[in-house]
Length: 114
Length: 114
Image 1 (cartoon, chains in turn yellow, cyan):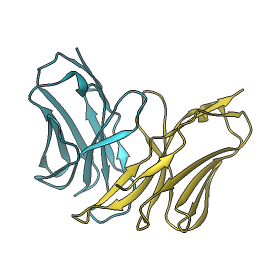
Image 2 (spheres, rainbow over the protein chains, first blue to last red; image 1 turned 180 degrees about the vertical axis):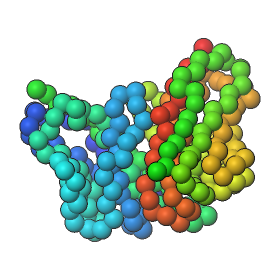
Image 3 (cartoon, chains in turn purple, yellow; image 1 turned 60 degrees about the horizontal axis):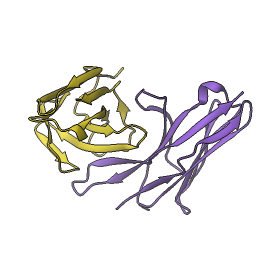
């Protein structure tokens, strides 16, 4: 069973600090990695995509990928109360029919405290 | 730009009643389409995915079914709902069959079974 693992949290971070969210995956053949943000009662929203080893920055968000360690992380700088949400890690995998499919982690709940 | 529409937003149904949830995508052709269910406080459970008209793959045995009568239309159905069918139902789309592109979600349908 191909899996994506995340710490469920809650992760509590003071406002203005850096929030660090981590994810590990089991399928060594995975090629695409995504972070989604889900506010309570809402649908997931894509915030970052990363396809190669290293760091990718977009505003206050930085995604980090290490394929050798099968590890993906998301850093949120200058955390704001509006960042309080559940963050889902997602990894592509191939199905038997060769169609691409995404496996989602169960999510980490992030709470930014004033 | 691509958009995904899902309706209704909220639905309350009695046990044993039928169900039909519809999802349509605009601004793209031949998308991969997906139905997920999310129980309260839980992760995303993939129910069905489709790579083309009439092509449906089922992930979890259950009393639900899916159909794709048109390229950009995906329907989730049940003949008789169970209490356990309550949850947040999400439709999503992604690029063509072999793409490693992310999935994009509709706003979801919150289904309550009485």
